[in-house]
Amino acid sequence: MGHLSANPMGPNPSGERPLGGEPDSKSHRWLWIVALAVLIAVGFWYFRGLRTSTEAQGPGGSGGASAGKGPGRQGAGAGGFVVPVVVASAQRGDLPVYFNGLGTVTAFNTVTVRSRVDGQITKINFTEGQFVHQGQDLVDIDSRPYQVQLEQAEGQLAKDQAQLRDVQVNYERYQLLYKEGVIPKQQVDTQGAQVGQFEGSIKGDQGAIDSAKLQIVYSHVTAPISGRVGLRLVDVGNIVHATDSTGLLVITQLQPIAVIFSLPQDQLPQVASKLQKGDQLVVDAYDRDDSTKIESGKLLTIDNQIDTATGTYKLKAVFNNDRNTLFPNQFVNVHLLADVKKNLVIVPASAIQRGPQGTYVYVVQNGNTAKIQTVTIAQSSADKVGLSAGVNPGDSVVVDGQDKLQDGSKINPNTSTAPTPNANGAQQPTSQPGNTHADAAARRRTQGPQADRSTGKGQ
Image 1 (spheres, one colour):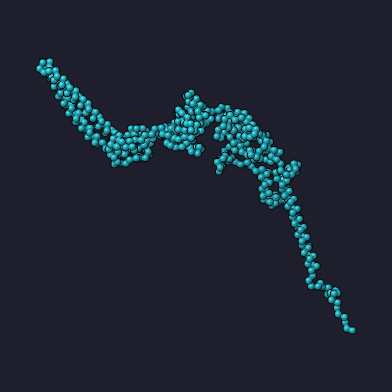
Image 2 (cartoon, rainbow, N blue to C red; image 1 turned 90 degrees about the vertical axis):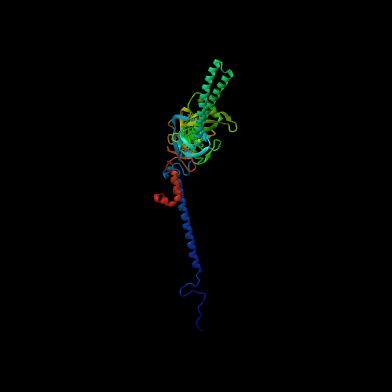
C-alpha cells in the first residue's frame, strides 16, 4: 500500500493560519471601539467638571468666597449681585419756575416805503440789507416838473401882489373922494372888494408855491424809521406813481424787536398778577431745537382775549437784539420766568421714579446698598426736580440703572457730573461704571476654557 495523503482538516504543520483570518480582524475592531468610548467619557467628564468650577466662581466672586454661600446665582437683594449705577448728590437751592411756549419773532415796526409823487427814479442811495437811520435819503425821483410848478406859482404871486398894490392905492383915493362927496358909496365898496379878491389870490399863490416845494421834498424819499432795508423792489429808471400798490422798499425795525408767543390759559392768573404788581418778567428766546439760548428780554404785555379754539392766550415780549440774532418771522421757543421756588432740595429729574407706592428715589446708604425713599415733589423743570420732603441735602440718589434695582440691592456707584446725549437724544453719563465680578465671569464663559487655563483656574 502506498503513503496515505494528508488530512485536509488537520492542523497545518507550518503553524500558519488559513487564508481569510476573520476572527482576529473582529477582535481588533472591538478594541478600537472600546478605546474611543473611553476617550469620549473622559472628555465629557473633564469639560463638565471645568464648567461647574467656572460657574461656581462667577457671580459670587472667587471660589473660596462662593464656597461659604453655596453654588449658583444669588438675587440682587441678597447681596450677591452687584449692580453698576450712576449717582448724583442732592443739593439745597432755589429752583426757577418757567412757562414754556412757542413764539414768532415780529418786527417792532415794519414800513413799506412808497412814493408820494409821480416821476422817474433817478438815483437809489441804499444797498440791500443796509441798516438805515430815520431821515436818511433813500431814493431820488426826478423833481424838475415840480421845480417848474414852483416857478409858475412864484410868478403868479408876483403878478397878484402888483395888482393888489394898485387896487389898494385906488381904494384909498376912492375913500377920500367919497368923503368930499365926489363919488358914491357903492363905488368905494366895489374898490374895497377888489382889494380883498387880490389878497385871496395872493394866498392861493402862496399855497401853490408851498405845494410845489413839498412835491420837491417828496421827490427825495427818506427813511421814516431806523431799521434794516430789505430787498430792493424797483430799479433806477422806473416810473413810479403815488397810487402804486407796490412800494419801493421795506424797512423793518430790529432794535428793539418783539416776540409773540402763546401760553395755556391756566397760567394766565399767575402771569397777570405779576404784571399788575409791576414786576419785570424775564423772557428767554431759544432756537428751534430748544437747546441754545439766543436772546433775553422782558415781557411787555398780555393780549386782551383768550383763543377759544386752542385755550391759549398771547403775550408780547420785547428784546433789545443788540447782536441782531433775532429776525422777523423767526420761530423760537420761549421760556418765561414766572417765579422762583426758594429753599428746595434739588435732584436730577432722571432720579425720580413712580410706582404703586407713589413717587420715590433710590438713595445710596452705607455699604453701597440702594434704598427706596418716598419723596414729595414741590416743583419740577426740564432737567431738575425740587423736593420738599424725603431726601436731605448731600444724599446720593441713583440717576441711571434703576431698572435693575430693588430695595436693598448691592450697587457699584459711579458719579457722573457731565451728562451727554446719546444717539436717541437721551442723557447718559460720560464715565461708565467699572467692571464687576459678574462681567468677568461672563467674559470667561465667552472665551472658553483657554482663559481659565491662562489664569491657572482650569487645572
